Amino acid sequence: MKDNIYKKLYQLQMEIGAISKDAKNPFYKSKYFDVNSLIKQLHPLLIKYNLVLVQPITDGYVRSVLVDLEGGSIESALLLPNNLDAQKIGSAITYYRRYTLQSLLALQAVDDDGNLAVATPKLAKLHLNTPEFKNAQKALMDGKSIQDIKNHYIVSQEILTELLNFKINK
Image (cartoon, rainbow, N blue to C red; front, side, top):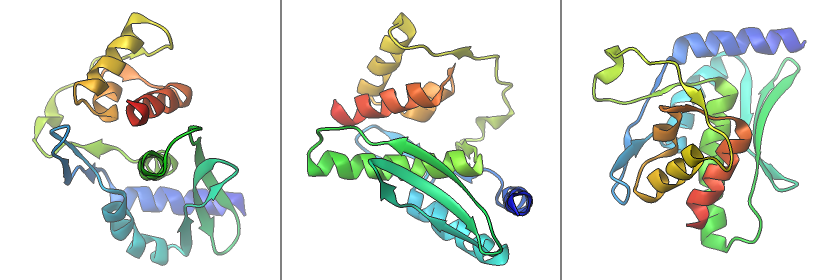
């Protein structure tokens, strides 16, 4: 049964392609893809392949779960930071919904500026407590996005969580 969901996920990925960054963040002067726009775009494909997307918050994790109505499911999850006020936790949930869904579906978010033809150099892995990590945090403070960081480094799930927590708490 689990093989079936992977076949459906593959078909869905082939149809959806790359996601365009269509929403603008005036505060950071950056673009991002809006989770609600993404879900709206995904909805017909989910129906077509008998899949259901749920994004529950359980045990402190924001989860994106793709359920095959014929059996099986797959998920991606991020642990929410502790001790945030309601507004910051709401922001964290929105970020985490977007990133868990992007990760679950292995979606690439692309810029709309036509710079996709440039070859990407091999990226270095970003590690905690390094000058590069501190530079990434500074870049976030200067208005850069997580995607900007990912364009320069390989970012593990642990580093992504740390960067998201930093961005939310700053």
